[in-house]
Image (tube, rainbow, N blue to C red):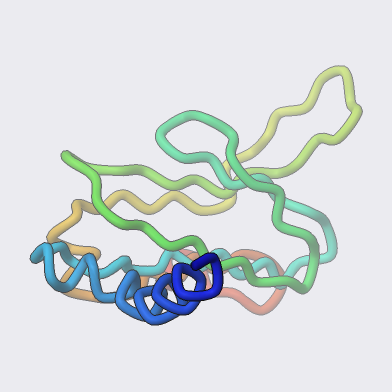
Length: 118
């Protein structure tokens, strides 16, 4: 009896990936932070620090849905410093409709990036 239940469960696992489609939900879209600099940076989402992005590294975040505009800022990372300006290196604000239209938003900072390139 246990074997039948496990077999039945395995048969339904691939269907879990179809749930958002069957429910009529939009698929996730990506926000990519590409740090081409020599220092780590911190990604802030609507004024809240969220992710550290190491030098020469790109991090992809899947965004499922949000209301209103959302602002992403990439700031200097201060680490253990008692005081740091946390200068904003790049700021991008967009709505869900804009993200849905573009599919992916790339925020690039560092030596090889161009300000405003996204």
